[in-house]
Figure 1 (cartoon, rainbow, N blue to C red):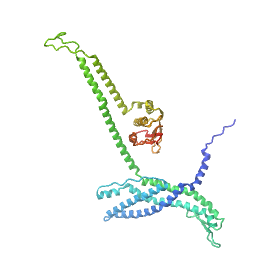
Figure 2 (cartoon, rainbow, N blue to C red; figure 1 turned 45 degrees about the vertical axis):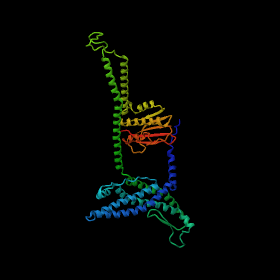
Figure 3 (cartoon, rainbow, N blue to C red; figure 1 turned 90 degrees about the vertical axis):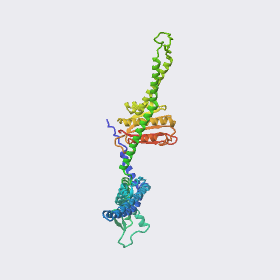
Figure 4 (cartoon, rainbow, N blue to C red; figure 1 turned 135 degrees about the horizontal axis):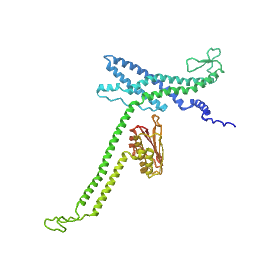
Amino acid sequence: MHDSPRATPHPTPDAPPALVATVLRAPFTRRAWTEAAYCLIAFPPALAGGVVLLVFLALGAGLTVSLLGAVIGALVLVGCLWFARRLGALHRGLASGLLGERVPGAGAPGPGSGVFGRLDARLRDAAGWRAVWYALVKLPVGALGWYAVLFWVTGLINVTAPLRWGVFGQNAAPGDGEGMPVVTPVPVGGFEVHTFAGTFVALPLGLALLLLAPWATRLAVEADRRLLRALLGPNLLAARVRDLEETRALAVDDSVALLRRVERDLHDGAQVRLVAVAMSLDMIKERLGAPVGGSDGGEGATGPGSAGPHPPIDLDRVRQLVDGAHRNATEALTELRDLARGIHPPVLDDGLPDALATLAARSTVPVELTADVPHRPTPAIETIAYFCAAELLTNVIKHSGASQVVITVTEGVADSGGSTGGVLRLRVADDGRGGAAVGTGSGLIGLTQRVRTVDGSLRVHSPEGGPTAVVVELPLHA
């Protein structure tokens, strides 16, 4: 009996050829040439700007510590910060044009009040000081980029050695002790060739340098990318604080709006119906309190002191009053139940998948529901996800003209990669006419604000003609 052959994974034998092909193609790619161009172009302004900045920073710092030149030194430092910002904008433009690296600029410094207040605000410009750091650190990084370009230059020189010897006559003269130099990007290791056959020794060396050149420039460019994002972009901590302030304001506004809606619904709905019930009961009480017969003086008494007989009870009218009171009480209970459900749907007590199943069953458009949530989110997240699904389903029914809706709720990792605790991803797709966008009156602005209060996100893909897909990502824990 023979052992069955072991299955060998396909990626293993394919990996070396793929790696070799990537290395061989690298010198001929657009990315390699644009990165080399960036290293070549970006270093001269970085060198000139860095040297100027160093000189004036030293001058400003020296004047600032002196007693008489403190104000002048502060003005020089403010000028350095302004210059560093302009230099940073130049580098952001080069990175955007050549590398496709779009780094948003930092915000303007604080305005300050008064002459010294504005001066103090400029000196405390954190984005300006980060631009100064970028200009200084860019000097060695830019020098590394220029050194990486040497791999391209020396590789091209050595590859063309046989051509230059045979066609352009760049060979050594007879009896001349000097030959054709074979250069390398390292200070040592160069040599000379004195024969045409010797130039073919430089050819493989040049090819090897050209194969290494894209990776050398890529290393320098990657270091510069990280510096651009860290020092020339918006301050991540400040951006986070602003985002938290905005989401806190949204949460406060949302809670105030909810309280106002509850008050309005109670005042205009249930309260009015309960008042009507109370009035109907008062009228019923009056009707039932009237005696059926005459006065105690005897039946048919008509004397001067007699009050006369009371009219008989109108049972049909009493029944109408009871029916009206019953109807108002029922409607008031329904409105209170709907109001409570709008605050926290009772169906969520059994979990989000069951709540969405109930929501899908009530829909007038066929809904295909897929729910896979191994870890139950916190109640606040479940509530937001449920209301998002309800609002999106309502939009589909009212505006899309779709014949089918697919709701998918899963647990995964955020597409941005910024979340480490997992996310709840809700996707609502339909085959309607499309054209949905945030801010077109479809309620998507409210949903976006609601998910932002818990650091969630909402994305809409809805081209004209459809289909439409809305993806809501929420953290599992609020």
